[in-house]
Picture 1 (spheres, rainbow, N blue to C red):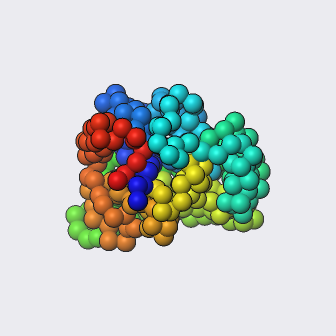
Picture 2: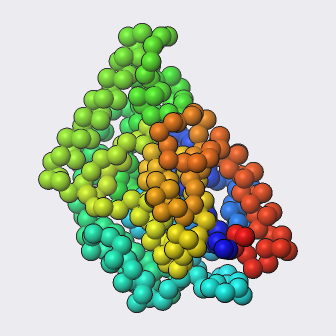
Picture 3: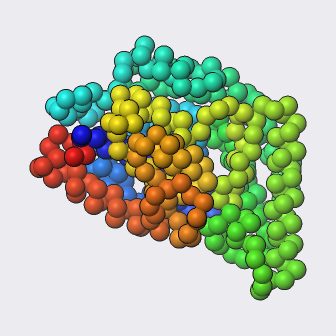
Length: 327
């Protein structure tokens, strides 16, 4: 049976390198060109923890589907692409069907107001004021900690500690592992290392205390040198992948989805594809992680670039004229 290839991409650490300043995580023109070529062959989506506006500003491509705030804020691609002439080539359902699909896909209320294809959907629209209030408290509570920043990602907020100054911090941004991985294990720094681990733990304690004060309305997840605070809703990157595949009218037996991501939050998408049998996860990491749900791995964004270029080369072959299909 033919299966339609779909491509899902995280942004930070996947399409762009990890940098000290989150506002300077710019993707290269070569990467932008590769993503554009891939999207001309296969439905392509960016699923990021950044706000929808931020990630769109970084990527600067209209013919993609976007999901910001860890999948809580979904937007359809602009209709610039001709659908292939093969059977079942429509990109997605109409507005009414997409809205019904969104309501059936989440335990939250959400909003959906599409104009065809994949309906825009916000899985936590009613929580935005709660997140804003929590973010303001976090800014106040962490303003005296050098190197800690609180980023506004609309439906979530990110407490970055990559640049936190500490006795064993080394150069800001050094290492890409989580705090426990980067600073755990013996040798070398002695008490300084222990001091820095204690600083990270103290920051985590502040974030958890603020989260607890919300009365169960928000939750905390840890990523790569960041604490993510999100609404307490049953929705993550895995749900966003399912929502988009449903919008493309592709069931588990119809799709071969590739999801490339580097962070803990991407594991939800890896797990969803494995559970549904609708594709595979590709972990972007220099570190072997035995607990990952990904089937394959790439080392870094430069490997991602080469992979996307080769995928586009394959998709552009005359034998794949119907496109979006995997034989």
